[in-house]
Image (tube, rainbow, N blue to C red; front, side, top):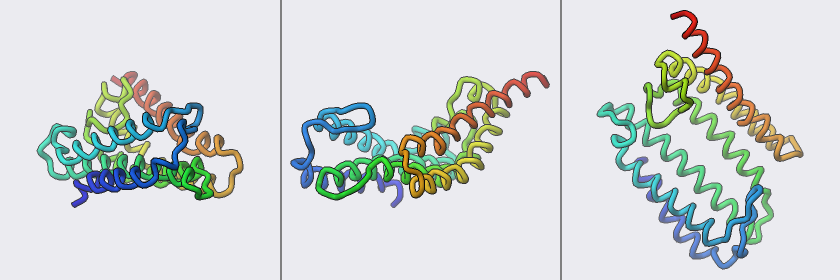
Length: 202
């Protein structure tokens, strides 16, 4: 059933868009860009459609017949679909008359996603199509394993931190900087240190 979750989200997406489209202004104010509403809806639809299709065929993404690996791949793809779905309807809700700070909602969604993803990152097989695809990480199996283990263990506390910042910090930009932003910097830095350390020990 969970493999078809993105298909269900896609159907809700279509119905919700038909009901709320007239409430959208000509241009959607997003971060530092303002795409036309047709572009915003179209791009969101295409991405969600792609996620719905690939989630049905996880073997094409994982490149493996391993059942656990394929289930993990489907789960992660559905997480991305849920994130996009919630982001999209947060924007629609804002333009439909609901008083909502969509950046804070997005920050909360990102925090929760980090907690979920953190549970799966340590299990990512070497050179999986989903993972931290830095050039030096995909070059070395040991670096891949250590990086994903570190990323998984740190994603959970940083995800919780991100959620707390949403509740208590006034500056929305700082929420993303001290939450997912700092986590990404730490993971990239750690992976580089591990790569050079392993290289020196060879």
